[in-house]
Image 1 (cartoon, helix red, strand yellow):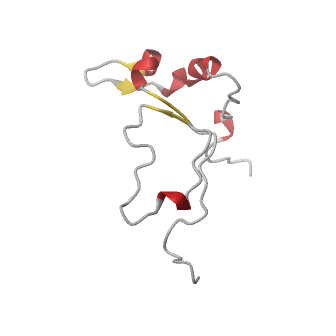
Image 2 (cartoon, one colour):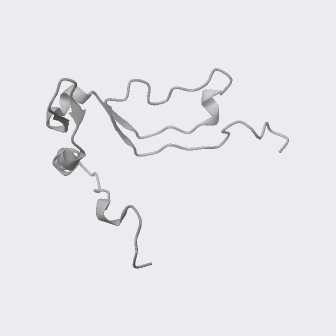
Amino acid sequence: MEENPLQPMGNSMHQNIMIGCQKPFDLMKEVDPTWLDRTNNAEWQLTEFPELLAGGPPARLDLSKLPAVWQKLAGFEPIPLEEIGPRPDR
Protein backbone atom coordinates (compact mmCIF):
# COMPACT_ATOMS: atom_id res chain seq x y z
CA MET A 1 0.00 0.00 0.00
CA GLU A 2 2.98 2.30 0.35
CA GLU A 3 3.92 2.01 -3.35
CA ASN A 4 1.04 3.86 -5.02
CA PRO A 5 -1.73 1.21 -4.82
CA LEU A 6 -3.88 2.76 -7.56
CA GLN A 7 -1.25 2.08 -10.24
CA PRO A 8 -0.81 -1.24 -12.11
CA MET A 9 2.54 -2.06 -10.56
CA GLY A 10 3.74 -5.60 -11.20
CA ASN A 11 1.10 -6.49 -13.80
CA SER A 12 2.20 -8.65 -16.69
CA MET A 13 0.96 -9.18 -20.23
CA HIS A 14 2.68 -12.19 -21.78
CA GLN A 15 2.18 -14.33 -24.86
CA ASN A 16 -0.75 -12.44 -26.36
CA ILE A 17 -1.66 -12.26 -30.00
CA MET A 18 -2.92 -8.86 -31.07
CA ILE A 19 -4.35 -8.43 -34.55
CA GLY A 20 -5.40 -5.01 -35.75
CA CYS A 21 -4.86 -3.22 -32.43
CA GLN A 22 -4.03 0.42 -33.06
CA LYS A 23 -2.62 0.98 -29.58
CA PRO A 24 -2.33 -2.38 -27.81
CA PHE A 25 -0.36 -0.98 -24.88
CA ASP A 26 -1.80 2.51 -24.72
CA LEU A 27 -1.14 3.61 -21.16
CA MET A 28 -2.51 6.61 -19.32
CA LYS A 29 0.11 9.31 -18.95
CA GLU A 30 0.48 8.75 -15.20
CA VAL A 31 1.34 5.05 -15.66
CA ASP A 32 5.04 4.32 -15.73
CA PRO A 33 5.68 1.71 -18.48
CA THR A 34 8.32 0.03 -16.32
CA TRP A 35 5.57 -1.07 -13.91
CA LEU A 36 4.23 -3.49 -16.52
CA ASP A 37 5.95 -6.58 -17.84
CA ARG A 38 4.94 -6.82 -21.52
CA THR A 39 7.05 -9.59 -23.02
CA ASN A 40 6.62 -12.09 -25.81
CA ASN A 41 3.53 -10.53 -27.39
CA ALA A 42 2.88 -10.75 -31.12
CA GLU A 43 1.32 -7.86 -33.03
CA TRP A 44 -0.01 -8.01 -36.61
CA GLN A 45 -1.99 -5.71 -38.81
CA LEU A 46 -5.51 -6.83 -39.68
CA THR A 47 -4.54 -6.64 -43.36
CA GLU A 48 -2.26 -9.64 -42.78
CA PHE A 49 -5.34 -11.77 -42.02
CA PRO A 50 -7.94 -10.78 -44.61
CA GLU A 51 -9.92 -13.94 -43.87
CA LEU A 52 -11.08 -12.32 -40.62
CA LEU A 53 -12.91 -9.55 -42.48
CA ALA A 54 -16.47 -10.24 -43.53
CA GLY A 55 -18.81 -8.21 -45.69
CA GLY A 56 -18.89 -4.51 -45.79
CA PRO A 57 -18.62 -1.75 -46.00
CA PRO A 58 -18.02 -1.38 -43.20
CA ALA A 59 -16.24 -4.68 -42.82
CA ARG A 60 -16.73 -6.58 -39.61
CA LEU A 61 -14.69 -9.27 -37.91
CA ASP A 62 -15.72 -12.87 -38.54
CA LEU A 63 -14.42 -14.55 -35.39
CA SER A 64 -15.50 -17.97 -36.66
CA LYS A 65 -12.39 -17.74 -38.88
CA LEU A 66 -9.99 -17.55 -35.93
CA PRO A 67 -9.05 -21.26 -36.01
CA ALA A 68 -7.64 -20.75 -39.52
CA VAL A 69 -5.52 -17.87 -38.22
CA TRP A 70 -4.26 -19.89 -35.28
CA GLN A 71 -2.89 -22.52 -37.66
CA LYS A 72 -0.63 -19.85 -39.17
CA LEU A 73 0.92 -18.98 -35.82
CA ALA A 74 3.70 -21.35 -34.84
CA GLY A 75 3.43 -22.61 -31.29
CA PHE A 76 0.00 -21.08 -30.63
CA GLU A 77 -2.30 -23.24 -28.54
CA PRO A 78 -5.92 -22.61 -29.58
CA ILE A 79 -8.27 -21.11 -27.07
CA PRO A 80 -11.00 -23.62 -26.13
CA LEU A 81 -13.88 -21.41 -27.30
CA GLU A 82 -16.40 -24.14 -26.52
CA GLU A 83 -15.49 -23.81 -22.84
CA ILE A 84 -16.10 -20.07 -22.67
CA GLY A 85 -19.41 -18.68 -21.47
CA PRO A 86 -22.26 -19.80 -19.20
CA ARG A 87 -22.45 -23.49 -18.42
CA PRO A 88 -25.96 -24.54 -17.39
CA ASP A 89 -24.67 -27.96 -16.25
CA ARG A 90 -22.60 -26.38 -13.45
